[in-house]
Length: 575
Ligand code: C2E
Ligand code: CA
Ligand code: CA
Image (cartoon, protein in one colour):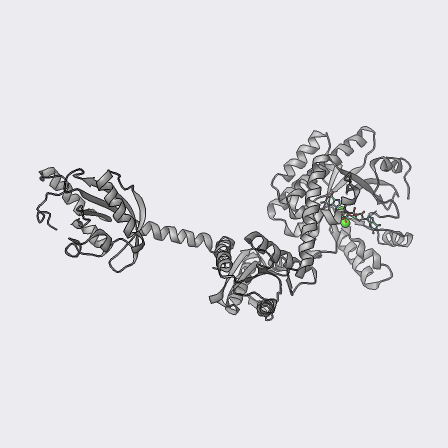
């Protein structure tokens, strides 16, 4: 490349030796394009990297206009304007990351800085120094792709889905069209995952993703992995239920054949919730939430089916929001109470422990609903944490009061899975016990088997620590969840509470009594103490005693009652 070709001296006037070396350096700079332009933006200098980066040889570039070479059409007018303003008003063009154009028209990412030499003379020269950012751009794109892709299934992830929904909503709004959103949740995946092990669980998810991708219209929709065993299919340009039903049937059909994994064939089904834009919501949050609510309804109706978001569901969500708002208010105003139900020792007929059950007592009594209604609502929001803390503190306070009166009654509190998931739960439990000068044996914990099954190893380890300290831990409602007896030995528990639904049938119903007996036997073999819940009649009580269970609890002995009543029952107890 020769610099002597130009009549006007370049860059620094007459070239001294140092300047010439500097020019040589610039002309050979790798990955840094240096271009010079005269006041008409004609190229007067074009270094070697400019050839590499933009694809024009020096000969091709010299004399051509900046805006005809490397400026994309949409930037043309601005570039001309900015250049002129610099020359006329001395307003420099700021450095910036730009996407310019190569000879073939392909975009190229550069960081562009500019200097004006001979400013104020008749022949100002603009020099552009462009650093090629292609590699960085590719890396950035790859990172972006990874951030938007679920690494297990290679499907777009939740983040990507939400980005996609933003633009799909924009399009649908401007073109007055609709779309359908299908929330697909695998039924009993957790159980399969636990039985087969996590790597096969992962294999299953991959196979499901593949099968679903194969059955959908990829050109007109997006299938994403929403998280865990949840997938979302967004079907563009669908605005009627009939079409959605066809799609839902196709999606369900993917699960008809079993999935071949390792040595076994796994059969799994799915529950699908459907919401339609704009009918069921016009913002991302609502559309997703409503499809999710519809999916829960499909599960509640027996799984392996689809369900639309309906007015009834919408009404229920509204009611739940109301309950949640009222609960929040009641937490502020301390409008809760604990009642206690004795757990009667079958051998002595007396009791040394009771279960604490929460009651909601707002001033406006019409707002109150029972715990089996408001606890699940609280669990869906963040409220359960505060409610659980309230229960824990209240129970500790009560236990201390009883101790001071010489009454030795352990209080078992119900703990929701959502509470355990908080890393602070066990710290809070210990701190609260300490604050009220209690021993680990004074406060027991009741957890449902579903909570235990879902608990990760950290939670199980924390529970084990508590159990070893002397905390009594019960599996609550045993028999209503997955009820695998083989699980029992893995859980750090001390008591097993058999759900009252078993007792309703036994002893008359052979099936129920066979189950009861089996559970009691296995429980005893594992050194667990058995509590039977919901004992309402003498014959049920006799039956429990005949099974040699340790404790019974139910209306026959006492309904859940106030602390005062417990005190009087305690002093005159015998059943
Ligand atoms: P749960 O833990 O299974 O509690 C036992 C439920 O059975 C209580 O209902 C109790 O009143 C009722 N019960 C006791 N004996 C009998 C009987 O002989 N017959 C019948 N039919 N029922 C009996 P409750 O108090 O309405 O509580 C319902 C559920 O709400 C509880 O079921 C528990 O899951 C939840 N819950 C209650 N308090 C709390 C709490 O403080 N925290 C959490 N996380 N959940 C709570
Ligand atoms: Ca319980
Ligand atoms: Ca229970």
